[in-house]
Length: 183
Length: 298
Ligand code: SF4
Ligand code: SF4
Image (cartoon, rainbow over all chains, first blue to last red; front, side, top):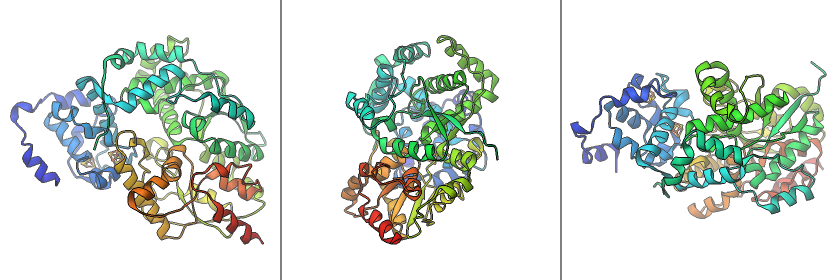
């Protein structure tokens, strides 16, 4: 389905629009310049993900914020498709830093919907247990010694757990729901 | 040129020790020979990048914690991974320049008895080689030039973009990795859309898009007749090497393109054996490539 067709099917209703949303967003570090977007479409044109996805469009994300479609954008799972290649940041004539805006929306979306892609919960749990986002198996450590690589540096998982606690992330992680693939 | 030997804390990150020892092994060999001293980081944790999408503060604090460890050791950091570099470099810059952010993050760090001061630098392997070792010295170390080889490079994203934050190579006209490759005697070929992303960062939520992105790159590389692809990031490497057979199956294609870590290519030119550089650990076996190098020398 083309972008235009899709928009026709999802007609925006006035009561969906939260006029304060764009101001809330522009107070957050990284998204300060969202109001400067004049919808030129350079970001979407140069975004490698938009080339292969029928739905992911950074320009549209910027417009949805400006229109105040808060619930719609924060519930949109396509937010998770940005690869953070930062091409859009380099090419935007208005310096909107749209990839950082997407990061801000993802962070908010986790709180708004109390959900995140499963992979992030798994990585976070590993991090809390081991200090790395992957559980490095014992065999890897043995193999390092065999081939003469120095032992891996020590991590302090108890400090990571503490860090999760003081940032409020631990509490969020405990009850957060997860979803798998975004197609 | 100063005679002082460059010394760095080696920041390995998570994915290299987990899956890609070949990159670590070859980088250590080559750097030692070029006179770069690597000091093992006494303690570290994940750079923070994987947590940025879900919680920016967690990312900032994880990164800052690593930077504090380096400050304590009073040594600059060397990373092999583009993601680790991008994260540590940008957080270092932000916390150095933005007093408000620094104070906010320092409140978290105080819980571990740490404080970010902003006394060190973070460099990726590519920048250590080009800025600290220097092209001349690398050229001198090349004992067996790979003159018969034609390869392509994939620099990746996070060591060059966003340009205004990294301020190194030009993402619209990548030069550094190409120049480093040509020092080995190999020819580095230009190809279409060579600055584009490998797609790997979203593979945990969607496979189809990154596979299409990587397949398109592989097609462009094949079109110019490159015999190998050279990477400087474990994630890009996994996308093109480990996933290559899966991409081939998904699109009913055959690429058979060996993907080497840059220090493996440089190592071969410096006279290390394929075994010493862990070339046997690559998923796409570089047999033809090694034969070509051999016959090119005879
Ligand atoms: S490139 Fe910048 S100004 Fe143009 S649509 Fe995208 S965010 Fe808006
Ligand atoms: S950073 Fe994200 S939105 Fe921007 S061009 Fe890359 S994939 Fe697209």
